[in-house]
Length: 299
Image (cartoon, rainbow, N blue to C red; front, top):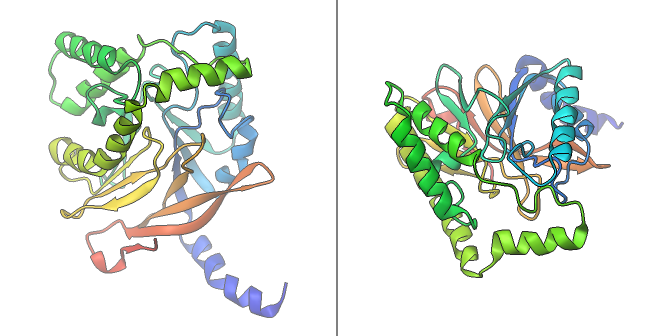
Protein backbone atom coordinates (compact mmCIF):
# COMPACT_ATOMS: atom_id res chain seq x y z
CA UNK A 1 0.00 0.00 0.00
CA UNK A 2 1.40 3.43 -0.93
CA UNK A 3 1.71 6.17 1.69
CA UNK A 4 -0.78 8.28 -0.23
CA UNK A 5 -3.38 5.54 -0.17
CA UNK A 6 -2.72 4.87 3.51
CA UNK A 7 -3.17 8.55 4.35
CA UNK A 8 -6.37 8.79 2.37
CA UNK A 9 -7.78 5.81 4.24
CA UNK A 10 -6.71 6.94 7.69
CA UNK A 11 -9.76 9.15 8.44
CA UNK A 12 -12.08 6.27 7.52
CA UNK A 13 -10.22 3.92 9.85
CA UNK A 14 -10.31 6.43 12.69
CA UNK A 15 -14.00 7.07 12.17
CA UNK A 16 -14.69 3.33 12.26
CA UNK A 17 -12.85 2.99 15.56
CA UNK A 18 -14.51 6.02 17.17
CA UNK A 19 -18.04 5.33 15.89
CA UNK A 20 -18.49 1.59 16.22
CA UNK A 21 -21.48 0.35 14.22
CA UNK A 22 -24.18 -0.75 16.64
CA UNK A 23 -26.80 -1.96 14.18
CA UNK A 24 -27.06 -2.81 10.50
CA UNK A 25 -30.40 -3.25 8.75
CA UNK A 26 -31.15 -5.08 5.49
CA UNK A 27 -34.33 -6.60 4.07
CA UNK A 28 -35.93 -8.74 1.39
CA UNK A 29 -33.28 -11.44 1.08
CA UNK A 30 -35.93 -13.89 -0.22
CA UNK A 31 -33.60 -16.79 0.48
CA UNK A 32 -34.88 -19.87 -1.35
CA UNK A 33 -36.44 -17.92 -4.19
CA UNK A 34 -34.76 -18.90 -7.44
CA UNK A 35 -33.80 -15.33 -8.39
CA UNK A 36 -32.40 -14.31 -5.00
CA UNK A 37 -28.70 -13.41 -5.08
CA UNK A 38 -28.33 -15.15 -1.71
CA UNK A 39 -27.83 -18.84 -2.26
CA UNK A 40 -26.09 -19.33 1.06
CA UNK A 41 -26.44 -17.22 4.19
CA UNK A 42 -22.65 -17.29 4.55
CA UNK A 43 -22.56 -14.72 1.72
CA UNK A 44 -23.82 -12.18 4.28
CA UNK A 45 -20.92 -12.79 6.68
CA UNK A 46 -19.02 -9.58 5.78
CA UNK A 47 -22.06 -7.58 6.91
CA UNK A 48 -21.75 -9.12 10.37
CA UNK A 49 -18.23 -7.84 10.92
CA UNK A 50 -17.66 -4.89 13.27
CA UNK A 51 -21.30 -4.64 14.26
CA UNK A 52 -23.30 -5.61 17.32
CA UNK A 53 -26.64 -6.46 15.69
CA UNK A 54 -27.85 -7.30 12.18
CA UNK A 55 -31.59 -6.77 11.66
CA UNK A 56 -33.21 -8.77 8.85
CA UNK A 57 -36.26 -6.63 8.16
CA UNK A 58 -38.75 -9.10 6.71
CA UNK A 59 -39.06 -11.40 3.71
CA UNK A 60 -35.89 -13.21 4.73
CA UNK A 61 -37.45 -16.52 3.66
CA UNK A 62 -40.98 -17.63 2.74
CA UNK A 63 -42.87 -19.44 5.49
CA UNK A 64 -46.37 -19.24 4.01
CA UNK A 65 -48.32 -22.35 2.96
CA UNK A 66 -46.83 -23.77 -0.22
CA UNK A 67 -46.73 -26.84 -2.44
CA UNK A 68 -43.39 -27.99 -1.02
CA UNK A 69 -43.47 -28.05 2.82
CA UNK A 70 -40.17 -29.94 2.97
CA UNK A 71 -38.42 -27.15 1.10
CA UNK A 72 -39.92 -24.54 3.46
CA UNK A 73 -38.63 -26.53 6.41
CA UNK A 74 -35.13 -26.68 4.92
CA UNK A 75 -35.08 -22.91 4.48
CA UNK A 76 -35.98 -22.43 8.13
CA UNK A 77 -33.25 -24.84 9.20
CA UNK A 78 -30.68 -22.96 7.11
CA UNK A 79 -31.73 -19.66 8.66
CA UNK A 80 -31.65 -21.10 12.17
CA UNK A 81 -28.14 -22.44 11.62
CA UNK A 82 -27.01 -19.03 10.35
CA UNK A 83 -28.44 -17.10 13.29
CA UNK A 84 -27.23 -19.54 15.93
CA UNK A 85 -23.69 -19.84 14.58
CA UNK A 86 -23.08 -16.09 14.41
CA UNK A 87 -21.31 -14.21 17.20
CA UNK A 88 -23.20 -11.12 16.04
CA UNK A 89 -26.80 -10.88 17.23
CA UNK A 90 -29.19 -11.42 14.32
CA UNK A 91 -32.67 -10.05 14.90
CA UNK A 92 -35.54 -11.22 12.67
CA UNK A 93 -38.52 -9.01 11.90
CA UNK A 94 -41.54 -10.37 10.09
CA UNK A 95 -42.56 -9.57 6.53
CA UNK A 96 -45.52 -10.51 4.38
CA UNK A 97 -43.63 -13.57 3.09
CA UNK A 98 -42.52 -14.71 6.55
CA UNK A 99 -45.34 -13.49 8.82
CA UNK A 100 -44.61 -16.04 11.55
CA UNK A 101 -40.80 -16.03 11.51
CA UNK A 102 -40.63 -13.92 14.66
CA UNK A 103 -42.89 -12.29 17.27
CA UNK A 104 -41.35 -8.95 16.24
CA UNK A 105 -43.23 -7.01 13.57
CA UNK A 106 -41.25 -3.79 14.10
CA UNK A 107 -38.59 -2.32 16.31
CA UNK A 108 -37.66 1.16 17.47
CA UNK A 109 -34.05 2.35 17.77
CA UNK A 110 -32.19 5.46 18.92
CA UNK A 111 -34.69 6.29 21.66
CA UNK A 112 -37.60 5.96 19.26
CA UNK A 113 -36.10 8.18 16.58
CA UNK A 114 -35.86 5.25 14.12
CA UNK A 115 -38.76 2.91 13.30
CA UNK A 116 -37.89 -0.30 11.46
CA UNK A 117 -40.64 -2.41 9.89
CA UNK A 118 -40.96 -4.38 6.68
CA UNK A 119 -43.21 -1.91 4.88
CA UNK A 120 -46.28 -3.83 3.72
CA UNK A 121 -48.28 -2.02 6.42
CA UNK A 122 -48.16 1.02 4.16
CA UNK A 123 -50.67 -0.69 1.85
CA UNK A 124 -54.12 -1.82 2.94
CA UNK A 125 -53.93 -4.66 0.41
CA UNK A 126 -50.33 -5.63 1.37
CA UNK A 127 -49.04 -6.06 -2.21
CA UNK A 128 -51.02 -3.72 -4.49
CA UNK A 129 -49.24 -5.06 -7.58
CA UNK A 130 -49.87 -8.73 -6.76
CA UNK A 131 -52.52 -11.15 -7.98
CA UNK A 132 -53.84 -11.46 -4.40
CA UNK A 133 -54.31 -7.75 -3.72
CA UNK A 134 -58.10 -7.99 -3.46
CA UNK A 135 -57.91 -11.08 -1.27
CA UNK A 136 -55.27 -9.44 0.93
CA UNK A 137 -57.43 -6.38 1.49
CA UNK A 138 -60.35 -8.60 2.48
CA UNK A 139 -58.20 -10.64 4.86
CA UNK A 140 -56.73 -7.51 6.50
CA UNK A 141 -60.22 -6.09 7.04
CA UNK A 142 -61.37 -9.40 8.54
CA UNK A 143 -58.41 -9.45 10.91
CA UNK A 144 -59.01 -5.87 12.00
CA UNK A 145 -62.59 -6.82 12.78
CA UNK A 146 -61.36 -9.56 15.12
CA UNK A 147 -58.33 -7.94 16.78
CA UNK A 148 -59.49 -5.66 19.57
CA UNK A 149 -58.46 -2.01 19.44
CA UNK A 150 -55.53 -1.19 21.70
CA UNK A 151 -53.53 1.80 22.84
CA UNK A 152 -50.99 1.09 20.10
CA UNK A 153 -52.76 1.08 16.76
CA UNK A 154 -49.48 0.42 14.92
CA UNK A 155 -49.15 -2.95 16.65
CA UNK A 156 -52.78 -3.79 15.87
CA UNK A 157 -52.36 -2.93 12.18
CA UNK A 158 -49.23 -5.04 11.92
CA UNK A 159 -50.92 -7.98 13.62
CA UNK A 160 -53.76 -7.76 11.09
CA UNK A 161 -51.35 -7.67 8.18
CA UNK A 162 -49.45 -10.67 9.51
CA UNK A 163 -52.60 -12.72 10.07
CA UNK A 164 -53.73 -11.87 6.54
CA UNK A 165 -50.36 -12.64 4.95
CA UNK A 166 -50.22 -16.05 6.62
CA UNK A 167 -53.36 -17.06 4.72
CA UNK A 168 -52.03 -16.09 1.29
CA UNK A 169 -50.33 -19.09 -0.35
CA UNK A 170 -46.98 -19.23 -2.10
CA UNK A 171 -46.91 -19.56 -5.86
CA UNK A 172 -43.60 -19.36 -7.75
CA UNK A 173 -41.48 -18.81 -4.63
CA UNK A 174 -40.84 -22.50 -3.87
CA UNK A 175 -40.85 -23.74 -7.47
CA UNK A 176 -37.54 -25.43 -8.28
CA UNK A 177 -38.09 -26.15 -11.99
CA UNK A 178 -36.73 -23.21 -13.97
CA UNK A 179 -39.31 -23.09 -16.77
CA UNK A 180 -42.26 -23.49 -14.41
CA UNK A 181 -40.73 -20.91 -12.05
CA UNK A 182 -40.43 -18.15 -14.65
CA UNK A 183 -43.83 -18.93 -16.15
CA UNK A 184 -45.39 -18.70 -12.70
CA UNK A 185 -43.37 -15.57 -11.87
CA UNK A 186 -44.74 -13.76 -14.92
CA UNK A 187 -48.27 -14.88 -14.11
CA UNK A 188 -48.00 -13.96 -10.42
CA UNK A 189 -46.19 -10.66 -10.72
CA UNK A 190 -46.38 -8.78 -14.01
CA UNK A 191 -49.39 -10.19 -15.81
CA UNK A 192 -51.65 -8.56 -16.85
CA UNK A 193 -49.51 -5.58 -17.90
CA UNK A 194 -51.59 -3.23 -15.72
CA UNK A 195 -49.72 -4.67 -12.73
CA UNK A 196 -46.64 -2.80 -13.87
CA UNK A 197 -48.45 0.48 -13.25
CA UNK A 198 -49.37 -0.69 -9.73
CA UNK A 199 -45.66 -1.34 -9.11
CA UNK A 200 -44.71 2.15 -10.32
CA UNK A 201 -47.48 3.66 -8.23
CA UNK A 202 -46.31 1.87 -5.09
CA UNK A 203 -42.77 3.20 -5.65
CA UNK A 204 -44.16 6.72 -6.13
CA UNK A 205 -46.32 6.58 -3.02
CA UNK A 206 -43.81 4.96 -0.66
CA UNK A 207 -42.26 8.16 0.78
CA UNK A 208 -45.64 9.82 1.28
CA UNK A 209 -47.16 6.74 2.91
CA UNK A 210 -44.10 6.29 5.12
CA UNK A 211 -44.28 9.88 6.26
CA UNK A 212 -47.99 9.47 7.02
CA UNK A 213 -47.36 6.27 9.01
CA UNK A 214 -44.87 7.99 11.29
CA UNK A 215 -47.05 11.06 11.66
CA UNK A 216 -50.07 8.97 12.66
CA UNK A 217 -48.44 6.34 14.88
CA UNK A 218 -44.93 7.44 15.92
CA UNK A 219 -45.01 11.23 15.94
CA UNK A 220 -41.59 11.54 17.62
CA UNK A 221 -39.82 9.33 15.08
CA UNK A 222 -37.67 10.94 12.38
CA UNK A 223 -36.70 7.89 10.31
CA UNK A 224 -38.62 5.01 8.78
CA UNK A 225 -36.53 2.07 7.55
CA UNK A 226 -38.47 -0.37 5.35
CA UNK A 227 -38.18 -2.66 2.37
CA UNK A 228 -41.05 -4.53 0.69
CA UNK A 229 -41.39 -2.57 -2.58
CA UNK A 230 -37.85 -3.59 -3.70
CA UNK A 231 -37.13 -0.01 -4.81
CA UNK A 232 -34.13 1.27 -2.81
CA UNK A 233 -33.82 4.91 -1.94
CA UNK A 234 -33.70 7.71 0.62
CA UNK A 235 -36.41 10.37 0.69
CA UNK A 236 -36.22 13.45 2.92
CA UNK A 237 -39.67 14.87 3.58
CA UNK A 238 -40.75 18.46 4.12
CA UNK A 239 -41.49 17.86 7.81
CA UNK A 240 -37.92 16.69 8.47
CA UNK A 241 -38.71 12.97 8.42
CA UNK A 242 -36.70 10.59 6.27
CA UNK A 243 -38.07 7.43 4.62
CA UNK A 244 -35.51 4.79 3.64
CA UNK A 245 -36.10 1.69 1.56
CA UNK A 246 -33.32 -0.90 1.60
CA UNK A 247 -34.35 -2.61 -1.63
CA UNK A 248 -34.04 -6.34 -2.28
CA UNK A 249 -31.60 -9.15 -3.00
CA UNK A 250 -33.70 -10.04 -6.04
CA UNK A 251 -33.16 -8.21 -9.34
CA UNK A 252 -33.36 -5.71 -10.85
CA UNK A 253 -33.32 -2.70 -8.50
CA UNK A 254 -30.46 -3.32 -6.08
CA UNK A 255 -30.03 -3.03 -2.34
CA UNK A 256 -28.97 -0.67 0.42
CA UNK A 257 -28.00 -1.06 4.07
CA UNK A 258 -28.69 1.19 7.04
CA UNK A 259 -26.05 1.52 9.77
CA UNK A 260 -26.60 3.08 13.18
CA UNK A 261 -23.84 4.26 15.49
CA UNK A 262 -24.33 6.15 18.74
CA UNK A 263 -24.77 9.44 16.93
CA UNK A 264 -25.39 8.78 13.23
CA UNK A 265 -27.60 6.95 10.77
CA UNK A 266 -25.74 6.04 7.59
CA UNK A 267 -27.13 4.58 4.35
CA UNK A 268 -24.73 2.54 2.22
CA UNK A 269 -24.83 0.67 -1.01
CA UNK A 270 -24.03 -3.04 -0.77
CA UNK A 271 -21.29 -4.44 -2.98
CA UNK A 272 -20.98 -8.01 -4.26
CA UNK A 273 -17.39 -9.23 -4.17
CA UNK A 274 -16.87 -12.86 -5.16
CA UNK A 275 -20.57 -13.50 -4.43
CA UNK A 276 -20.27 -12.13 -0.88
CA UNK A 277 -21.99 -8.94 0.27
CA UNK A 278 -19.90 -6.07 1.64
CA UNK A 279 -20.62 -2.55 2.91
CA UNK A 280 -20.16 -0.11 0.04
CA UNK A 281 -20.35 3.58 -0.74
CA UNK A 282 -22.13 5.92 1.68
CA UNK A 283 -25.02 7.63 -0.11
CA UNK A 284 -26.58 9.46 2.84
CA UNK A 285 -25.86 10.16 6.48
CA UNK A 286 -27.86 11.85 9.20
CA UNK A 287 -27.16 12.91 12.74
CA UNK A 288 -29.41 11.21 15.29
CA UNK A 289 -30.12 14.62 16.77
CA UNK A 290 -32.26 17.50 15.62
CA UNK A 291 -29.23 19.40 14.30
CA UNK A 292 -29.74 19.59 10.54
CA UNK A 293 -26.23 20.88 9.84
CA UNK A 294 -24.69 17.43 9.95
CA UNK A 295 -27.31 15.75 7.76
CA UNK A 296 -25.94 14.89 4.35
CA UNK A 297 -27.43 13.08 1.37
CA UNK A 298 -24.59 12.20 -0.96
CA UNK A 299 -26.68 11.02 -3.88
